[in-house]
Length: 324
Image 1: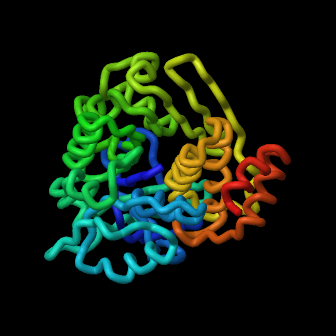
Image 2 (image 1 turned 90 degrees about the horizontal axis):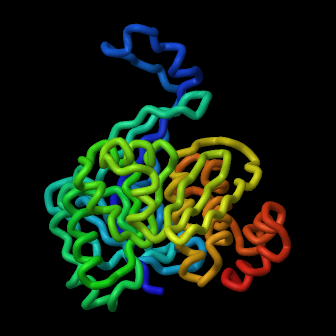
């Protein structure tokens, strides 16, 4: 399966606050908030939704095609992704702007406050899919993850016109996109990825009901944090899975991206939706145990062993055949 992943590439500035954000919020004064938090540390790591998804797929042995706009500071990051199996040969490199930056502070309850500087990502609207596919061959699936909204709309329109399956993943851009943009991205997608909050936001912004949103896509995948994940299908399928037990909860940044990596890898391998969910949850567990979205490591043996503990011997045998 030839898979393209469109979206952001960025650098993550990760900070931790040794307290609770909620302790600094004053009831009745939330309309005027001016807060400052003294953080304990700062890590600068590679990130960006598309890059994170591609990295996770590369860790599982796939070779996804990265479709993104990056900055003039791209060289080191490109070498890193290439070493981990990502096809980086089709990105748009800005002559003037730096790669996007994501800044997030996490408190002791794993609540987060984040800001995002798009940088070169704003040029993603200039990316044309057709010339890329002239070199790579026609895509079987394109993941449209958070990006410049105009780029997301264009990729969606081109993919639909060419009959390319879409995995729609608006996530962080939900707050920025208007109702019509969300409708355009969702309508006709083969897979829609959201967490529970994003689903509620989509209902609010589009004016569609929960059932109407589901009717617009073939399959809807909803992540539920520590409770696991579920997939609902237009045909009535409903599958729920639980998360594997994590060794530690270090940082949740990038967990959703890695879940998508595992799920899409399962699709590429032709596995059932249940296995796809489990693969996503297993990969996400590795991410929450590390600081940084692309810092986790495992061997095939280690991954299969943990998968067996979480989901049983038969499930582990199914994925082992693809990781050998």
